[in-house]
Length: 65
Image 1 (cartoon, rainbow, N blue to C red):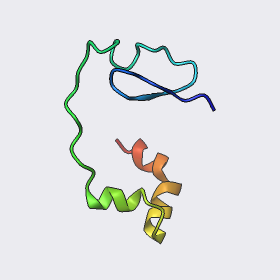
Image 2: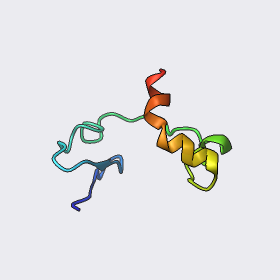
Image 3: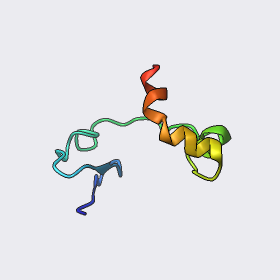
């Protein structure tokens, strides 16, 4: 797979995505996101039955918002 990383913001772009779509070639600067909570880290880890259930049904959960 062809992985492309923006040299300005280090975002990984999808194949075929324009180079300037993420940060407009460094013109847009965002504050870093806060650290992920322990609960979210656990839910995304696939190490527990709850996390596997969460990931299996993640689209249903995000559709609630």
